[in-house]
Image 1 (cartoon, rainbow, N blue to C red):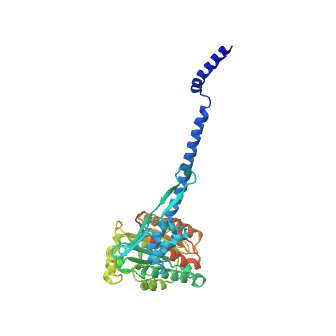
Image 2 (cartoon, rainbow, N blue to C red):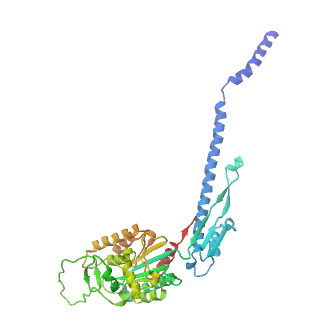
Image 3 (tube, rainbow, N blue to C red):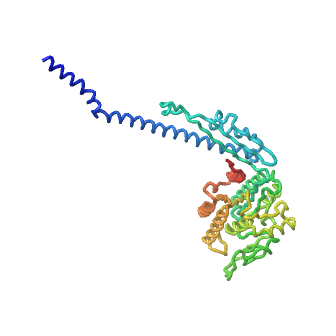
Length: 420
């Protein structure tokens, strides 16, 4: 009996290791454990990478804005140095430590003002530290340059001086004079060598261009005095039953187009002389404004330079469309809508206006539009004409000054470029 028991035990001892090796019981649990650990690793990597990218994008945005602001010396009125402006942006974003001394500012007559910033940070991991990956480095960099002489800005102000600008005791025209004068001063006070030009195009029923340029215009029909139209009339029907002042072409010097002004006092004088009268032809005003970007007008501008009406600093204007480092911008203001002209219906005038807007935008011209206490129709037209919703403004009288100041700052920003 004892011998038989011993043989059984020996058999069990021999078979137990071999059976354990052959058995598959419990192997899925082991595999699941490894899969679970891998899932935790992948999820941890995704979460920590997402946190890292969010931090990097935020810091890159602050860096971009800071270097651009630091190069805009013309818009801070000397209240801060480039270094102070740069540091203030990082301080506002609570990133002062990340900036540290990781920036460089140089300024010379040959290269202009250059600002470079390369903040550094470390993002601690929340899950990957379980496998000894404790953090990720966060690095960004940006550079901006304000060129000393290479950037050019041609700005055209197309301004509504129709009769409604004189309503409410002349509050609108007064606000316009003040706001536009501030813009002219802001842009032209430090103007050198014709770097910035400002063209003033007042419009009411018609537009009065400098008479010296009329011989250089083609395809102009229906000319009344010195106010050319862009369409030939086939007939005029007299339906007037009362005495009225039907003068459509006013030739007062203050209502004339003032092209390519580079002097702040000259521009302010022209702006402050504006008076309200007649009705509204936005399409004519904008079409004339667009003409001062058209290189084919150059012979006419050359004549104005010869006559002494325009400074020879602006020789070669308007620039060719492919001329590098040129910013072109329009400010189009109305306090109403296309109205009451005999040339076209209001709907056709709107269509003509938008056609010019579209052509200018295709050419890369920035269009800032201002619906200055305008009607719903005028607001819609201005919104559709603007380069983007951010380029459209609809201020009341008290807000016009801020609008023009904002536009002045924005057009100067366009002459700056992120170089990295």
